[in-house]
Image (cartoon, rainbow, N blue to C red; front, side, top):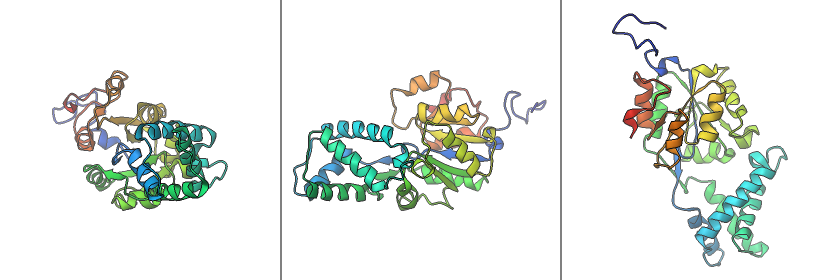
Length: 274
């Protein structure tokens, strides 16, 4: 699109990225919602409810990271390919988390602890919604854009967690692509292909993905030709390298709204972000 008048945009850019888009996909954790407290808080409460002492927070956290990585390697997408029940996947993961942290419970005790943990993370209790999330999603949908949620998560995010947090299909988002349901997970670009398909066959150049991970969000979306944007809500040390790699980095969804609506060059570092 060329321009010869002041009223039109600079030659390098259409009036705004927004005018090009038909679809915006968003990551969930770190983008729309955040964890409340620490993992140890919930494991401690569960252990106490079964009459056990509170386990060491740091050891449990490290144990969980190892156990989750190992389960994701052995049974990706929450056991999708093996048709593994969701609760069974998490039961192995939680048992291994405790074991790697040095805690071994008898079967009855572990069952009580696990039931409490599983129920907690299947509710909205451990999560909080960022205050700009609902307004941003509704603004997009009000502009006639399709909004998709793309997350490495299982069905409880779709059915319980997001609705309980006030993020509802039909008012805040139109469709979801959840790894535990579709059987493909970030950073595999196929999860983004599934989103383009779910939106009705939208072309990548008419889609924008917003997330908080260069590896899982930005890189795979860009590899398909989608536009992409990263949020740095917590001032992560990695954000500087994100910028160096050419990614637009913004502090929150309010800034993303301004960036989308204004004459901002897509690949340029937003100077007003800091």
